[in-house]
Length: 282
Image 1 (tube, helix red, strand yellow):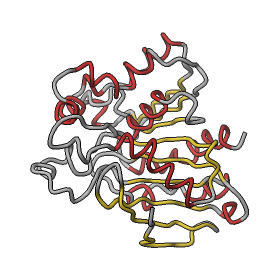
Image 2 (cartoon, rainbow, N blue to C red):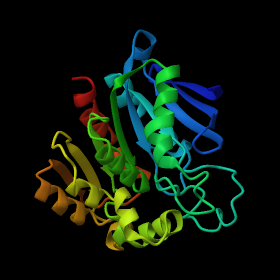
Image 3 (cartoon, rainbow, N blue to C red):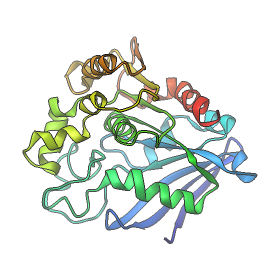
Image 4 (cartoon, helix red, strand yellow):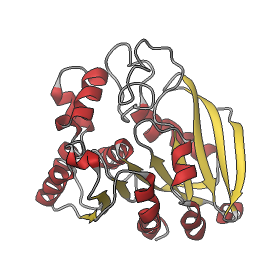
């Protein structure tokens, strides 16, 4: 698979790069960002995948979160893909900010006209890691995942649907129960059709109930003044309740005064990198 380098910038002794490639799953050109810490020059490092939220590209996280110093210190390769296929010329894909372009929701669509391209779940869990493992100095056995909002939902479902694949998972303000929130209902009915049982296969609150193994420590940070929390889009309380029934350890931190923005992410990003480094460097 040919990779085309778009940019490369030195940062905290490592390199922040962006590449473009032709995606087999999504049948379009895709960009992803990758940070190679100084340690990657001398050996294989663990891989940490970041999934961004609605309207984001691969750029938002790398330019706004301030994660580089912690990633450099802990020796983690950090990969940030785009949030949806691009330029597929599907009718209606650019009509709203919370569906279509920039809003792939990390599912494999089953409905026309989305099912050909909108396969972000397989892209993130299969195609992208294979591409990274083949082209960069990462250890395929040491991989973790985190994300924000729609990407927090993505990180949780990727970890819960693939026991043992990821060493750790964390999320900022994740959409925890999309089956029961307006964003989720809109996206899932469009991508997956009207059968709500199909939706549950991509809903962390339902997935955690059938998770076979308790060897997954989950860290979630949520801003208390997050408008989307107040609007009932995120529903972390549903996930917490399902996890405690399952006795799956979740550290849930409600952060006073913080909202949904990258200022909130930047404040706690070092904690999340530490959380993952604990498992990835064990």
